[in-house]
Length: 220
Image (cartoon, rainbow, N blue to C red):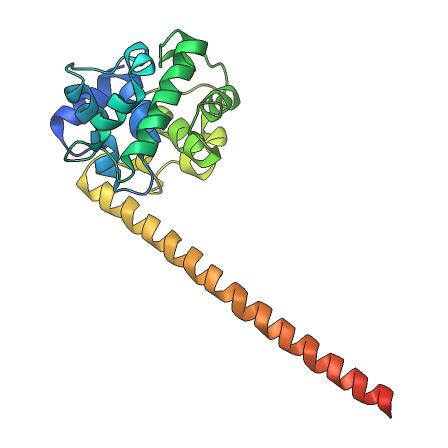
């Protein structure tokens, strides 16, 4: 697994993501509620603090939980929520040890279809439907992992030429496009959320008015 990756926008961190399947999985896991570059720099920071040049699922799975959380909390913190994310990374590695003998690449190495690949990713601790689809797209677009139907399994994130997720980041320009798309989606979601109470209030007002009118008619 050797590719040119520019998710962290930091040469050493990106080099680790390019050669380490576990680092890529951990980076994707960390990619929530913090900037994407921060998330994907996390695996390199963690490896450095653990005294190595790569991550090992067996080592992480067996690490003392409090000491592991401290690695996340040291300044600069690996995540905005270091304690909870340290726990999730350990859970991920414990799952990999139990189901794949600690080999992160085995998650996708022999996946025969996109659906199988997506389901294996979705089964990982911390990987919901959206995260599993994005990582399916990332594997296909940047790591050459392309079982039959991978684009379909990745949903909209698998579309050629899209700028929707980390799967589409190949440098600073595409990073800004993806960030702009995410901001647009957040704004749309916020507007939709704000519109729901207003619509509900309008419906309630109409219902109350109709009820009063019916009561008035009944009295006549």
